[in-house]
Amino acid sequence: MNPVEAYLEQVRAIHLSGAGVPETSYYPALSNLFNEIGKTLDPKVRCIINLANRGAGLPDGGLFTADQLRRTPDEDAFTAQVPSRGAIEVKPPSEEVEAIAGTAQLARYLDRYRQVLVTNLRDFALFGREADGQTVKLEHGSLAPNEELFWQSALHPRVFALREGARLVESLRRVMLHAAPLAAPQDLAAFLASYARDARIRLEGHDLPALASLRAALEEALGMQFEGEKGEHFFRSTLVQTLFYGIFSAWVIWAQHHPREDRTAVFDWKSAAWSIELPVLRTLFGLISTRSTLQPLDLVPLIDSACRALNRVDRVQFFARFEEGLAVQYFYEPFLEAFDPDLRKQLGVWYTPREIVQYQVTRVDTVLREELGIADGLADERVVVLDPCCGTGTYLVEVLKRIAKTLKAKSGDALLANDLKRAAMERVFGFEILPAPFVVAHLQLGLLLAHLGAPLGGDHERVGVYLTNALTGWEPPKGPKQKVLPFPDLEEEREAAEHVKRDQPILVILGNPPYNAFAGVSPQEE
Image (cartoon, rainbow, N blue to C red; front, side, top):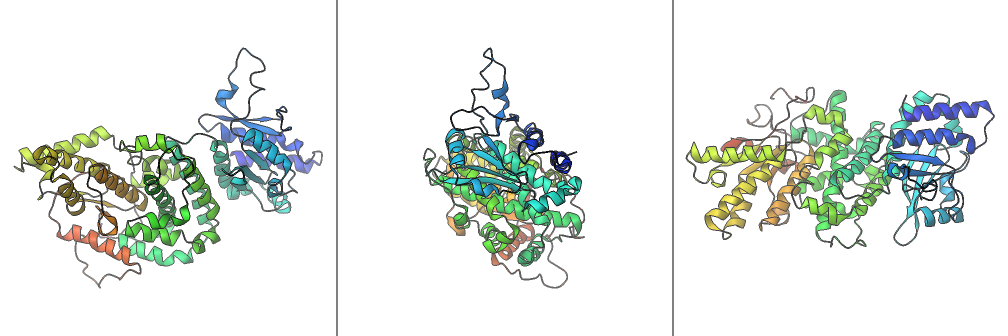
């Protein structure tokens, strides 16, 4: 039995008995719900009911991390602690959680505990404070919009939990993690994946007429059809990944222009599309992130919360790892594992150890030199390289590093920037079918070129990584002329990818392609 179903079973039994009181009778059910979710986190989080008065009143409970529960010689050591993940205030289901937002009680609790989870059994809202001291709702999860519907639905706990439980679990996980420090890539990946899962759940219950033209254009551009349950899942997962990775990539670009030590700088997702220089991504992100698309799906609050999570990141620590070429290069895999493990398995998205990538690239370079008589190896202008399923660009990064090493040894820094940039744009190619890793590959290669003194120059310069199906488009179509896509950037992306497939004299193919066919959505040409 999942935690939400168990919670609803307990709540229903208490309510039907007629013997309970509006708040305190439901404390055990709430405590069990919080503890079941809290034990899945690292560190574990535990709910303690009825906290002692620490100068702000008597909260109904608090959320403590496991390290706070360790025994000490002092018997009163635990009781003196403030719950590190916030206080809890319980209201009857007849009241609205929003009503407490402006009360003196919440203000006292926020002064003492920094954040407070307010619940009326059916709604769960986490409140905190902005930098200017204003009270703000940080997270929100809901089972029902009103008391009547809540009790009516609670008569069928399993059905109710299947319908609303997954979103509530995601919300409560984020509540318990909200006060945790954000610095490590895997922690940020977990947060973004949680918001993305919630968004995907919301999409599953809606038709998407506003995105019908985008769906058709993506099908045509990728040379595949989103058919059946698997194809529909692929399309919706692609939308969600593009949305949240578009925000993440825009944040990375934004962070480059703001001192990492400046904690007053605030990233705003509403202007995110304008900071994305890659045309095809800007088109996808722009179409998905318009309010006319997001508001009917109730995604705006999720994106606002994801944006707040990005603004909580310790950028000094995060980008210290990012500059090493590890944080973003391998950021996508933990994100997809947390967001959509089934799709990850279907598409064979697995981390390739850096040492293996370096060995393979070095070995290819050696073969070119020693067996094919190409003295400069990968750095020779005649050598055209393709990673047909490039993912986040791990292999392409190492190829460009190897080229840079050879160029520097041969002629110093004099021609390095120009020759390296030309290689990245004109003869080192990557194909990727998923927009999210496609984004990361562009970020990675762009940052690498900038680090090596060969930065790209806006829209007119881009690396040779294309959003395309690597298994189609190698031969000119035999039937009717291909459809003209309604979005020029997608049309240009398709044409550029097909130019590589049909016209480039590819000599080296390397990488770690998916091992599992994605059956049911791809054409016979594969």
